Image: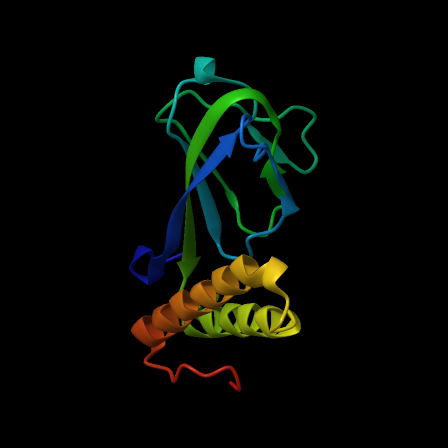
Length: 156
């Protein structure tokens, strides 16, 4: 891997809050070259938690400031917390020679737009979900344009 080809595909702060009911993230794959999970708070601020990696018996719990790197195609998830609040900064790294980032962004944009379009326009109970999906599509479109100077439409 040539370091000159590495790019940051995005970062987000993930908040797990036992009081709000957002306690875990299901098993999934990120699909890019490497995922970095950075612990943003102390282990004594929450119970449970950590990152579950498929094939490992125990979740990995990191002290604040430590990072877990794993291949993006490894199935993983956020282990449930039972109390407190856990914060993690999750960053996605890709290699421009392996994953054409503009195509990745356009594919994600299309998935978000397609999902938003499946929600009936008159379903008021799902308007926030539709807005979230369309905002996500907009971000992916902007990223595709920035990295690949591609047109932002869902027909690509």
